[in-house]
Amino acid sequence: MYDGGQEIRIVTDKDAFKERGRGLEEEYFHRKERELIAKMREKAAAEAARRAIGEKTGVADAQILQDLHDLGYTADTISLLHVVPLVQMAWAEGHVSMRERDLIIEAARARGIESGSPADRQLAGWLATRPSDELFAATLRAIGAMLESRPAEEREASRRDLVSYLSSIASASGGVLGWGAVSDEERAVLSRVTQELEKTHKTAGVLPKP
Image 1 (cartoon, rainbow, N blue to C red):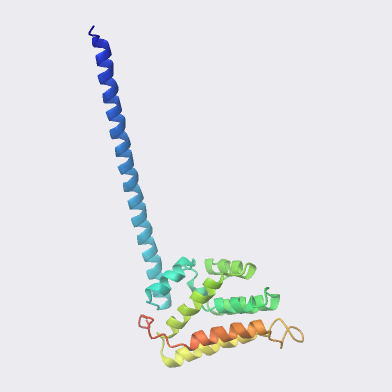
Image 2 (cartoon, rainbow, N blue to C red; image 1 turned 30 degrees about the vertical axis):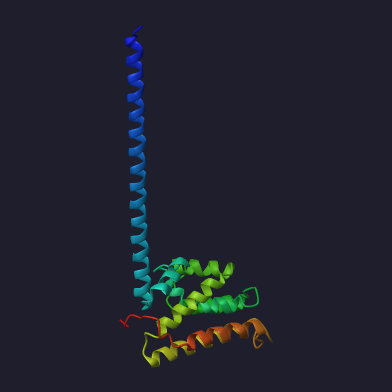
């Protein structure tokens, strides 16, 4: 026997199922669209950040800029670049002495890093907790590439200054009244840093000096 009410109910159920399907499909595509937009914005922000770092340092090597960005450097903290080898030296024996900390802060202030600035806060974090070996290595590569963009005289002066600071840090925690003794670990760090700085970065692209 024909039951019109039952047929109407079945048709209505089918329509509702189709509507739900269309709704889920639309939701899926909207979600994918939002994800794509978010990725595009993230990519644009990362490119802008790398470009800002490149402008600040004079380094154009894409891989070095990517490394620095991945390690957390920003336009506000890239001024710490030349201070990082000093931090590496201070941590050579597994801890940072008060004298070493004072010398590093002094070097940071000489480079225009003001107390309370983003760079200063980042430096305080590095002095409290040892940065990764990856950060030390990538920073040295960037310093080497940046120095290659400078005139020979300026390049050598910058290298001498950095090595001088490193030697002061190395001798700050030992010997009589905290001066004079340089450990094997500190000599190893000094050797690694100076070897990296002496390399000729023939493959590293650099921007001309402003």
